[in-house]
Amino acid sequence: MRIAFGNDHAGFDQKAELVEYLKSLGHEVTDYGTDSSDRVDYPDYAFKVGEAVAAGDQDFGILVCGTGIGMSIAANKVRGIRAANVTMPDVAPFARAHNNANVLTLSARYVDVDTNKLIIKKFLETEFEGGRHEGRVNKINALDEERR
Ligand code: RB5
Image 1 (cartoon, rainbow, N blue to C red):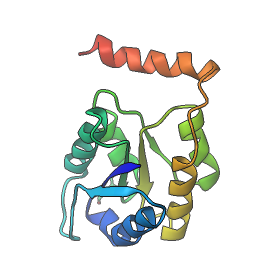
Image 2 (tube, helix red, strand yellow):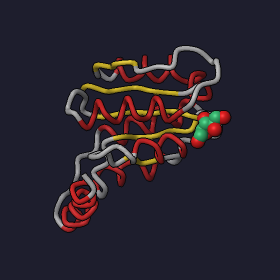
Image 3 (tube, helix red, strand yellow):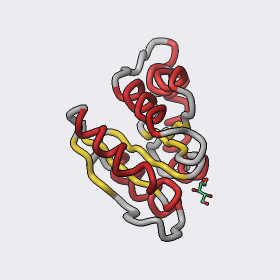
């Protein structure tokens, strides 16, 4: 799959290993920055990745910051984005199966890199279940349309 990857300075520590991991799973990764630990503003990267996914240029986005929270708040401002902040592997499949999340946000300061790899794997290998979840996700999507 085509994966848009973005991070801020706090996420930079895990970036190289996570990008390599994604490639080892056979994904095509596009790096939207940042490329150093110099302080930056996470919304800049969340918006770039979110817009690439919303435009259909990328299949999924992965964003890493200190907690994953700022990235998820910012990415969810992009129309068409359903970003999920996941810090526990067991929860990762639900972000896809129930919420049809198209962006995954991760914490580099509170979750170790191996746990984040597992979260990524479980997220990307899970399909949206549809069914009773479809109507709920459609209600979220409808808000995007109303506010255009
Ligand atoms: C940066 O210090 C930190 O605020 C950021 O990485 C992120 O955790 C925000 O939610």
